[in-house]
Image 1 (cartoon, rainbow, N blue to C red):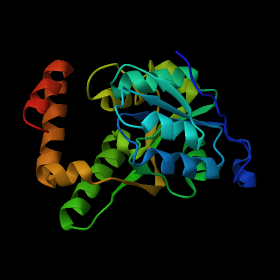
Image 2: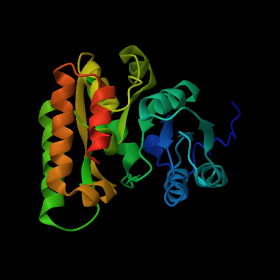
Image 3: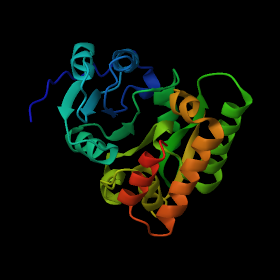
Image 4: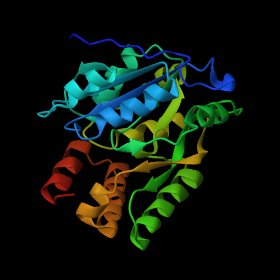
Length: 246
């Protein structure tokens, strides 16, 4: 497969403390033309080593916009696990940051990543979750996600998971399943060390929360986890979720 390679300037926008940080950002996409360019521009201005977009079959202008913004773009069969593994295989950074296209990182995310991964016994990290929008329901959803991440060490993909590339390989990468790929990787990473949260917060889109409603979205997630823990195939879980519009 061909790619448009555009490695970003390593020192652009970095503070002296993070000038030696080598971070590859991997973004799985599918029909994200409205957001992808602004995400890449923010990363470019922050001075990360490279931004890799792995597209899973977009029918819009996602790939065109990503290339124009300066990312390296690959195509892949759909599925976040498959797409993120492809990006990780192509990445050259010492640290991998997996970022959803509708999630915005805090301004000091490089320093935050350095701080977490420098702690002894840590295998991976993620950011605290913030959801765009107003309402008690969204704040409750944020609190539940952050409680789960802190005390169960199970952050999800919309919290911008990061780890050393070597650790990612030791853990075996993402399971290439239709859902729960982040949950499964976190379970394996916990065997290699602690998973800790950065002090800063990412901001993620509220579109799924708005579409389903906070309670329904939360309940759907918990049912998927329970079914997965009981040994039900991720393919069956995905079919059930899609049939219910979740």
